[in-house]
Image (tube, rainbow, N blue to C red; front, top):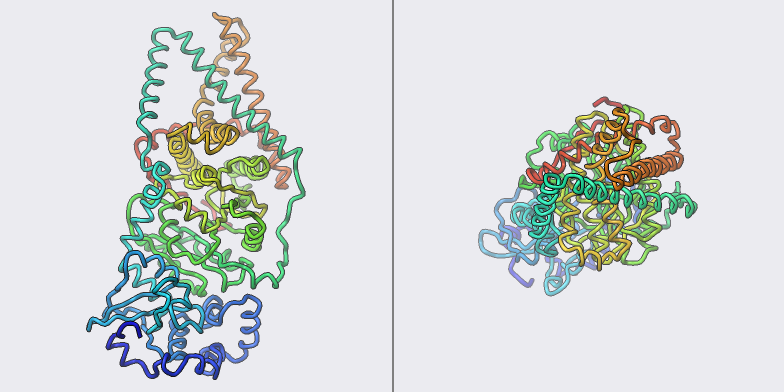
Length: 639
């Protein structure tokens, strides 16, 4: 051995596996047969077990663990017996972790540790997923450490617990600050650049002074600017409408019965599911994840919980989960945000592909296979695929109906059009599928951005990556009450303000990286829509008051105001017309034509969006990183 084993381990060894040769031991019996011979697995399971190994090219350990055929601790204890190695049980407190900081990532990814016992001797303990693994090199650890012989076996849970205990503060620090360190200027931690603050002060002072000294000219200038922004947003939407309507290609539906022959080529897929105050819906999301049509031995599902969320942790603890599930507990720290929790869990991800689902999501069972096939057929610069989102409670209240209309327009018309036009995609917060390499290269999620999805889509585009649209449906819950809807919409708009401020801290650089079309798309989607929401009530009040007073069609004091009035009238009719046409097309494509009768209420719905935008501005300056949690409910229950 390269280093001496600890005395506690030395006593547990019966045979030195290096001396007798592991090849001789394995030649006597396979590990799956060893499980049967030792009463850990029923003999009747063995033929199906071996077929699953052959179809997926997964090892006996991976199959047994992922399918829940053998309890984790028992499985790895048997693996230790198979190799005549010592087994490190749970709750071992007599060993100290002896790992260099640069090795921590490797330890978490490949599940190995170097420990020191009380006598000062060190040894290597690992949780191999391949029963034939005898050295760190067999686990995938490269470099000099790859030559180290494994001295003891432990379960993955035991090793994760030891690593968390030793390095949780380091993981938390990385989850919060990695983006700021790796890509300065991309984090929302710094809300505004100095020039942005000065620009806001100058614009605010200029408007105030102008309205005081020359109110007519100032009103004309402000009105013309707002009309121009409305026009930009409407033209953008119109281009999306024509692109989606005229350039529609046959929709590539995910296969209902994916070929089992593909299993051996499928990569390990990490699925991240952040859960905070979701005890009532835990059983629903676990059932949806278990229904995914993907080999469990190739699944790495992370249920990401908060340490102080006792109820959700108890709800998860009450479930019997197969070994493809891993419960990640995030230590309490600020900011308390979803992206920080995702970053914390990402450090433990085994997959080359990563998906994110929310607590209430019910993805199409074939979605992971469909995404894996799409990545395999795409160039490396495709960093992410965004799937379609819809609601399973769209007819519950008038709010859910309006929400369904909004999502139909976004996911059936706008996002597919952006994909066809090769423009930056504003990602949704769920059903995103990433290449792990691209996600890590981009710095992960921004822990300080409360709408981390839109930010990441723009960041990918700036770094030369592309995001695609994938036609696989995920159903989720639409906010059904004004309180829940308002809190959620307020957070979304606040995050879009953060995203706009971050990426506009250097406009010329953004223009160079996105190009003219991408830059204008960013202005129209992120900046334009937020500003439109802020200014929409002003137009409504003005036209309502002018109509009620009978002065709407009378000549104004200045000819310029007549032209501005005409421009605003055309703008409103044009904007409403385009928005309605997009909604109609989206509803036809989702098969929800019964909601067409509710389109006129969009005018009222947009007033709610506008009110949320004003609160979002307030929170942007006063509580920029506070996450307004959206409360979810199981299917069939009332909020």
